[in-house]
Image (cartoon, rainbow, N blue to C red; front, side):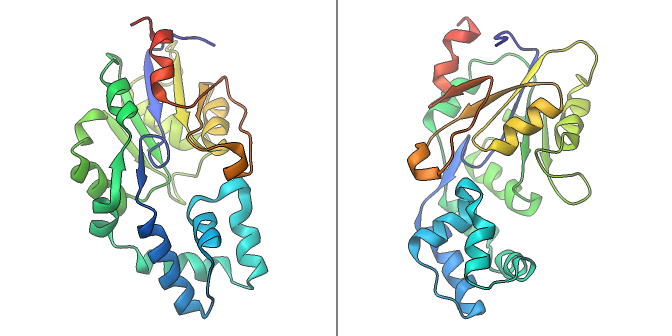
Length: 215
């Protein structure tokens, strides 16, 4: 794996930040109430994090239409409450402080949710570009959101080497599809997530990458 990169891209949720468990369970509980379905705590966690690709299966087993689920989910999401329940991983702050190359964010978190989180944690100025995936931009592992971030950083396909770090298989897929290295940040065990993600490198904490940065 190349260790000296000209730029770094990161996923947000589960990679740099996470959320207090009570918030997603509350949101998923409210969505379930509107659907007339009582989700278990495990199902609420599965629906929030999508462990092992089980989100679709969970909804199918409960007879819930996915589009209706997501419509209600977005109605129940409160940007301020979500931001206040979100915390920054200590190693994320420590690692990004070591970087002196351009840094960008490519996230599935929607803009109306991402901006309050970045503002609340006071980390918006860490990133020279923030790309929030949507139906027009594309969703990881589609390389288009990554390519957009690369274009914003001025490093798209012009000899610069880069990497995308994330906690989800779609992050690694997006990195590879865009011609970048992919670092899997495995903050939870495969036994919990139901998957083992292949990447150019797998780490439990971003600080595991410090030595590879030569600092």
